[in-house]
Length: 128
Image (tube, rainbow, N blue to C red; front, side, top):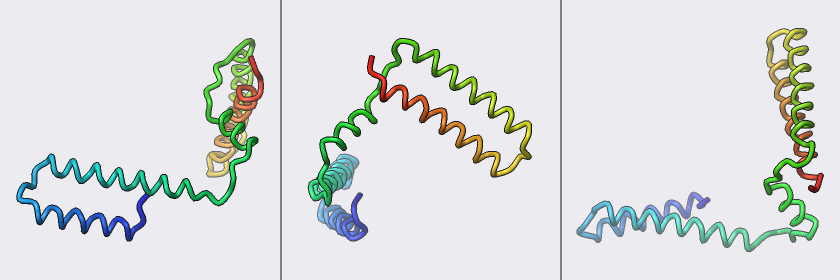
């Protein structure tokens, strides 16, 4: 993202260009919009090139694994369904035993997260 000062400078440059230009049509606005997007991308690239920390081989491997689709294989789909069914049972127990409240909502949300992370543990760490 552009800093506030950079945005102000770009807006001023755009206003100056619009005032100098006799034609204020949609094509010119489209061109200016593209230049703003290009400037934002260039700033993003510069910020990324100035990382404070080095990406280790372990970091790179973990990042690649965590952000890659892992299609289910073997008996994984059945195991996923088993985890979901057990979590659904616990959800009905919580709903049946706890008053409607923020705390109940949090418990159910955390249960959903536990199911997700449990299935991610299987997907990410079991090789076909």
